[in-house]
Every structure is written in C-alpha cells, then in structure tokens.
Length: 343
Image (cartoon, rainbow, N blue to C red; front, side, top):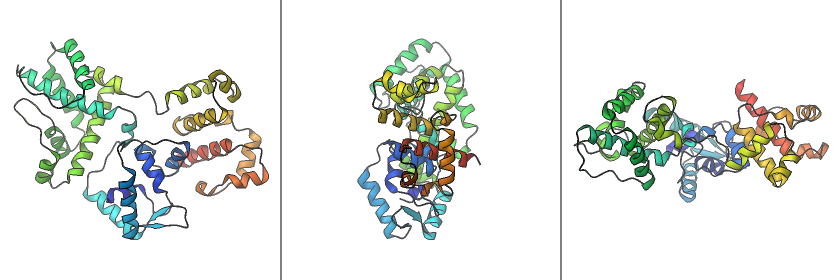
C-alpha cells in the first residue's frame, strides 16, 4: 500500500483517479494533462493490470489511516504522517529507476523472450537439446525460433554473457545477483520471488519490481548496442508515445498544415484533431505551440493567468474572451507547464 504514497504530494492536491489511470495507461487528454502537472507521466503504463476497486480501497484505507487528506474537494495531499511513511518506504524498499521505459516497449512479450533466450542459450552452451522450456507465449517462442535459426552457429553463451556483464556492471552486486537468479539455465532452476525474499530480506514485491526494472532496462541497453540480440528487441520497441492516429495528425501539423486542412484530409471531427494535437503537445519535446496560439492570444493569456497553473480555469477566460477555445487554453497550460519544468 505504502508505495502508492510516492505518487502524492504534501503541497499539490492530486486526484487518485488520475494517478490510477496514468499507472494503468487509461488515456484521455485530461488524464495526460494532469499526469503532466503531477509530474508522474514517467510512470505511464507501469501497472497495466491495476484493478480499480483494489486501488480505490487502498486509497480509502490511506485516508482512514490519516496518511492522505482531502483538500477542499480538489484532491488528496500527503499528511505529515503520510510523508514520513512515504520516505520510510523509499528507504527500505527497491525503487524502480527507469519507469519511463515501460511505455516504450512491449514489456510482457520482451520478458517472455528474455527468459526463454537465457535458458536456450545456456542449454545450447552445454550441447543439451532435451529440456523443458520455461512457460512462454507463442509469440515469444516464435521470435526465439526465428532468431536462433539465424544465429545458432555463433558463440551464443559467450556473447550473451558479455552483454549481461556489460549491462549489470552499472547495477549493484546485490541487484545483479538477484536478477540472474530469476532465470532458468543448464541444470539451474530459477528461484521464485518468495525464495529470494527469504534469503535477502527484501519483500516479494521488491523482487518483482527489480525484475521489471532491470529486464526493461536490459531491453533498452540491447537496443542501443550492436549485438546480435538487438534484432530480438527492436520489433518490441514502440516508435513513440502517441497513438497511430495521433502520430499521423501530428505529422501533418508539423509539416505546416492547418487544423482545418488536417480535418479535411484525415476526415476527422475537429474535436478529434484537437485531442490529437493536445496529446502531441504533452509528449513531443519541441511541439510548436505558436502555430496554434496567436501573439494576441498569448498576450491575453499572460494577463489573465498567473501563479499556480493548477488553479487556472477556463471559465475565467470565457468571461472576457469567449471566442478563444478550450483547446487553446489547454495548449497554453501545457506549454507553461513544460517551461515551468525547465526553469
């Protein structure tokens, strides 16, 4: 339960529903915007199987235990007790170092492939062709089979060992040891998270988080290298954080096309084009906001809205400038949020 405290703040009221939907990758432009404001978008898709009822019950329990408190109907903040519990948890447990990679790879498939790869290469190194392979998906087995046909004549044991050593030299000795204990190999049965927890003092959850963290970091390590294992990983790497449709809309926008033209060319509703561009504004590092917001609109925004961006409301703009759309208001919030982060 305490790990969820890491997604709350002492000073910024945060809505639990936004946190849950970011963690489980349930995307709406509103969720993504508030995920940006909460600075938790690196954790997008980290818990794709997160159950709403279980999450809500945990939040309710933390409110009851006075770890979280409701702030004027705006969301929940950490109490002093909650902040201490959060800090204690962070000190005593494994903390994921690269959560942002989870939204950039097909993680479950890669983990199946990785387990199978280590076992097959290990057995092949000893010339063993009779063994029970680890449970894995058909896609994983098919990927390994095709790859193995192309590279089986190489010194696979040596090459994979070299890659693992290069990767793990940047991790602590304890973390590296735990990671390798989770694989099957020649005459070696992988340890369960429960077994490792007993021997290390870590919790089973810590072992699971470590496995998720290091396995996806290893995928990224292979993608950035030139080894024969790179071809196994590259098909699992996502080209970007935008949906396919939003990517196409952004491509046209980036080429200089107007919203009206994009709407016509793509045969989409204007509201859909707006959603695509807002999503792109959140995720694309060098998004061109000035192509959509005029100098006059910038002047109006800068006069009307100052201070905490969380407290800016479109209704205030409607009172004086009703012709300016909500989309432009949100774009301005996104741009200022990004500038605020850079400062």
